[in-house]
Length: 224
Image (cartoon, rainbow, N blue to C red; front, side, top):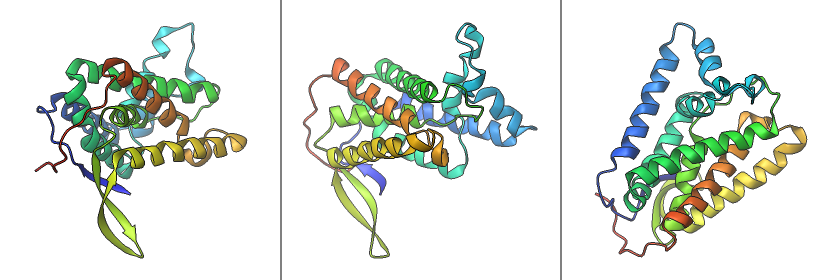
């Protein structure tokens, strides 16, 4: 399922959301055009085995890793989800609180995955934990909106309007099940940091509950 748009118009221009998308794209550009892309990744991605809890200078990758990605499809999917869901989260939480939620969700997501594999030498990178935080917040704020989704149906692609609560609920259940399945073979199974997604989603969910405890009820009308 590929989200295309949601049924709620943005309350204001999403400066923070758009800024995060542009910064992430720029960081990916620097990554792929670096003279030594592998060295660039090893420097700025989160390599759990290199983290020394007694040396704060080794903590910065918990932040910088959010802006790197493993390829075009990786960054495209993350930024698409952020584009569709992040603008309204920013609109209802406010710019400062949204930025705080995004970064905090990414941090908690990274920490969640790190705690499961603290000795790993495989780089962790991607905005998935932070984006998952925006999804968790959207689940709290706008559970009654609908998502215009590109959906495969008997070999064809068609547009379907799916309730946000169902789509995001399905997504997080899938992450939890996939994370549980990955545990026996190691948390790096398949190269997907499922527990970063889980940690980020529930961080965004809880922060939205605290910052804006009542869900939003608005007329549904597709954004132009």
